[in-house]
Image 1: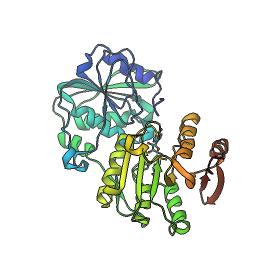
Image 2 (image 1 turned 180 degrees about the horizontal axis):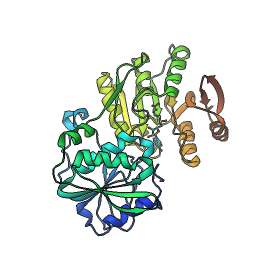
Image 3 (image 1 turned 90 degrees about the vertical axis):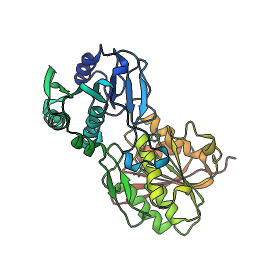
Image 4 (image 1 turned 30 degrees about the vertical axis):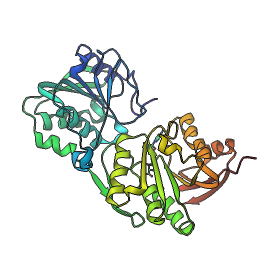
Length: 362
Ligand SMILES: C[S@@+](CC[C@H](N)C(=O)[O-])C[C@H]1O[C@@H](n2cnc3c(N)ncnc32)[C@H](O)[C@@H]1O
């Protein structure tokens, strides 16, 4: 899988890889960096998406929610601070707050005297990143340069633990009149500060056109933090929803948001690459969903996008509706046509709401 925001030949990544090439893997943490080539085996690599694969024998560790959002029964201990070196590769598209969270996570795994590393273009946020490193760790220096990139290093001597904790615990919350309760998010998930406009357009359309029809099994594919599934559970008090996403933090937040809404028993969460490897519990419902709601990752590579969309056919009961919200339906229409779907497009300001159904096989 290609990971968004990661290009192995980036000069900044090369600076980082060289800086930690000799560090024993057990003493090294890669914080949302993707895989590094040319490092010692057994590095600890924090991952955000379940599709990320280890390279060079790295040990992939799923990221997790701030402690105060984890259910008490499953609260995991913070990793012990045993690393000598921790690396952060900024993922610009996930926002500055995500980079800050990564820097805080990296700081929290370092033992005294450990080194925090980051590389960025000086002209594209490098100075701000250096400022954050300094505010948390107390010092920062540029140790190498390569084609506009600076390699920054801080040494853990007297970190500002309150500044680290504030970034580790950062959450957002937003509401919408059609949703059952406030939605909580963290940096690193889709549309973390507000309900996405496309998602809002879809539920507003469905609320006026579908609410008086019955749905008992709803599939929220690419669910993010769960707004579409939660809308369905509020609309149909006897319905069950299955929320599927590959983002580890997003699926944990869907569970959290369902708990807060008092709907945990009706919201089933599946962390996976779409519906490719369903759990046994989810697989029991193949071909039995009577509604699918999808705000898909339109920036995904075309094959991955098509695989997500065409999988709907075998999960819905014949004749059941899928609603998919996109900015422009062109590529989606083509994929749906190739999978023999009947398609209707409803245009609303800024979006196209695509209704797809698949008839019973002849
Ligand atoms: C546009 S966001 C929509 C999120 C949510 N439905 C909403 O309306 O706010 C797309 C979501 O698809 C997820 N995603 C991308 N590729 C995926 C895949 N192969 N399998 C499962 N989820 C995926 C992303 O993690 C992201 O949460």
